[in-house]
Image (cartoon, rainbow, N blue to C red; front, side):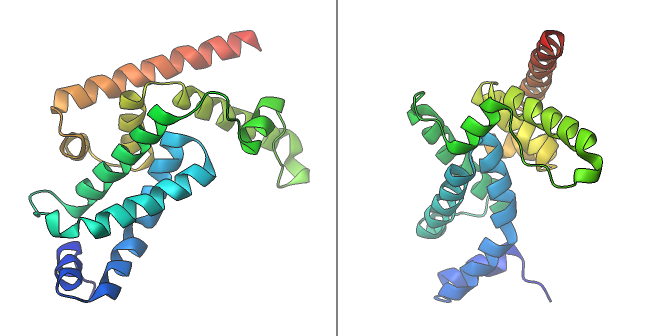
Length: 187
């Protein structure tokens, strides 16, 4: 029988420190996906994911259960991402970004070289368009399109009205579409 998040939290707060590892294993992939799409850098996303779970563990006694654990942990992750984005220096460029700027991307299957290169370029352009959006739009798109959350869940996580979530989603998608069209015209 699989334990619920609430049961795991109760065990952790009851002194079973290993129980928290169950929550980490359950939510780590989701939180990493969110932080990677928000921050755009693997190393920074891994650090933010670790920081999210450390913060959740330290503050677990403050979790009141009024919202789902998933909403609470997503909120922590988004706060960490937003803090990192505000403090990010424009002059620091990772090796991955340098590779993207040069247009070089590794190719997995040489039989379909042209298709792979084209798919990688599309992925790169979508990633760049997403990264160019303001954080409040990006986080809604990431949670809806990549994490598969419902609009109501996103509203709970962000603590904003449902209508605001929908507005940010559709405005963000519209902005991405414009950026991608401009890019396509330039090619």
